Image 1: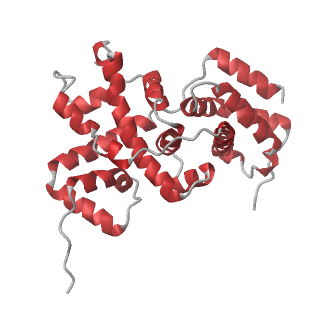
Image 2: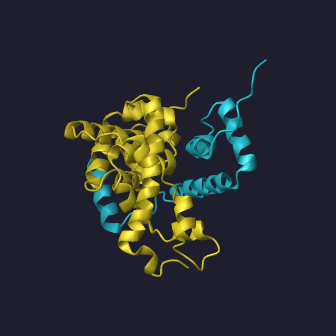
Image 3: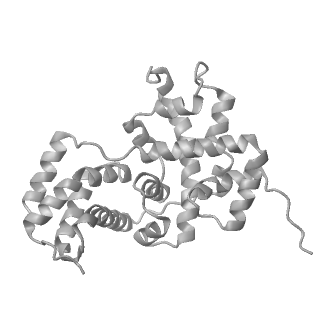
Length: 80
Length: 194
C-alpha cells in the first residue's frame, strides 16, 4: 500500500508558483501545488500576484526609439 | 518547400530597421551603458550571416538571439566573476506579503496592482540593473522577451537546471529590489500612483 504524502508547506508552494505558471513542473508537483492552493488563501494571493508581476514584466516591451538613437542606428544600418 | 528569400543588402536593411526598437530595448535591459554599441555589434554579425536566415518572418527572434550572443561574449571578455546568491538570502522575501504588512498605499483598494503601476519604464530598468547580470539576463529573456528556458540555456551556454535556479533567485531578488528601490527613491510619494 502506498501512503499519500501530506500537503506541501507554503514555502514549497510559493517556491514553485512561477514554474507552475510556466507549466514547467512535473505532473506530480502540479498536483501538489494545486492541492495546497485549494486550502491556502495566502498562497492563492501569492499566485495572483505572481500573475500580475509576470504581466507587468511582459508589458515593458519595445516602444518607439528616441529620435537621436533611431537616427544613429539607421545610419549604421545604411552604411553596412 | 522554402520560398527563395531575398538576401541582398537592401533586404537586410529593411528587415533590420523594423527590428531596431526591439533590439535596442532588449540591449537597454541587459546593460547599463553601451546599449547602442551592443546593437551595432549584433547588426554587424547578423549582416555577415544574413544568408543563414531561412524566413524573413523569423528576423526578429534571429536578431535578438545574435544580440544575446554578443552580450554573452562581452561578459566572457570582462571575465567578472559574480557569486551565486545563497538560497536562504533571497528565499524568505515575499513582496506580496511585505506589501500587505507594510501597506505603503493605505487608500488603495488594489494595493499590489497600484504598487507596480507606480514604476515607470525607467524605474523598472533601474531595478533590473541592480541585479547581477547572472540573474538579470535570464529574467529579462524569459519574462520580458518571451524566450523559452531551454533556449535561454543554449544562448547563455549554461545547463537548464542552472537557468531555472537563476530564474528563481532572480525573481526573488527582483521583488526585493522593487521594494528597496521604492523605499530609497520615495517613489510612492511622487504622486505617480493614480
